[in-house]
Length: 224
Image (cartoon, rainbow, N blue to C red; front, top):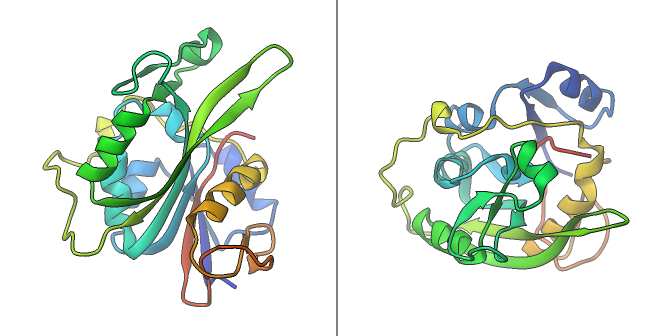
């Protein structure tokens, strides 16, 4: 069982919905970047499904995550794929409705370069169908990173500031998070237990890392 699970969201209404789930030890009304930079060396695991799609350049996010993770901490997240346009870059989603909503996509080579720059070991990056409807499937990635040993701080010297965000983090309650989180944790892990966010118990025997009583987890609430 994990010791503590925290949720972060900018919307009071969405936090209220998350609070009704009864699974969080603490819920914070704050943007992701400022929250992480205020809590250095605090979390063993940070999970974000469909939140980083609201960021363009990920440098400030990755630096903030690195700072907030403990030694060998894990970061699992999803984003839209930009490989159809340019694997080395990021840009507004090529899907009109998503672009109108302020969503970004990220290329696989761009992501790999950012991970290296900010001191992360790549555990897994897999192509996924991030969303789908009756008429289209929207590609994306699920990435699982581990804070690399021997790196004292991210290699970038860019300031990590909340006002460097290209967009705020728009979030809903956590119900839609769990399938993506399970995928990410399944890929992330190295021992034999599985983290079930709805009960905060490690239940199913999979190739997963152990979250025990010493672990502290942050869930970035996201679209359902």
